[in-house]
Length: 243
Ligand SMILES: C[S@@+](CC[C@H](N)C(=O)[O-])C[C@H]1O[C@@H](n2cnc3c(N)ncnc32)[C@H](O)[C@@H]1O
Image (cartoon, rainbow, N blue to C red):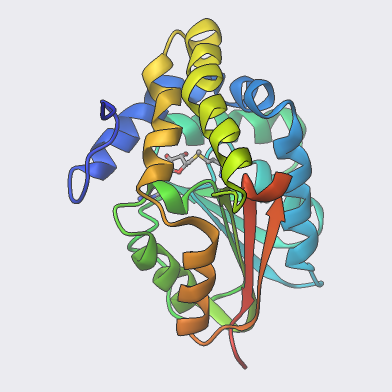
């Protein structure tokens, strides 16, 4: 059975927007519950791979409530978080106000926009990340193409998302977790099972880490790597735009 928040092609964005508007307030709590807190560690890994240098400009796409954007900013990058969901960005703004109520310096900056049509010129950023975002786009290849376009030569491009474990037994166990426990947690703590059942539905339509690596190679990125986490249940794709 397909999911109310999933539609292929053009109508996809509106459905995804509805989904995140519905869960924004509880998003961070649910992330901790469904991943047993591990998403923090995986996002930390993304930030380490970003290898922030002084003066770097970073862009975090589909930034949501801002975890990766905040982490990049803490490491010294002048960071922009972009998302199309006003409700998710409201949470990100509230977090920033809470963390740094006095500061006139706004780092990260948050901006509303579409990851598939980025409002930035070519070659603008030293780091471009996306966490749990590519899978939600009507065209993940288009999203990756935009990441490539706005990255400067030498920039690090990093994608964190749900993966597809190569081991058949582990994949079955993990997909069962996504099918049963994750929607149950969504229902119990957010009153919305469908929003969390969407994760498995979207993953079925996303070719995951191996295809992302292939596309990175097709874009002629250097040092393309796949880092499987939890036996490939999560994955980080890494590549560098050639100089
Ligand atoms: C699962 S959340 C990830 C949030 C955050 N990156 C994290 O790791 O916690 C996915 C985010 O992607 C955003 N999103 C989905 N499609 C988008 C698009 N086309 N343009 C911009 N943001 C989009 C949603 O609004 C949502 O905030």
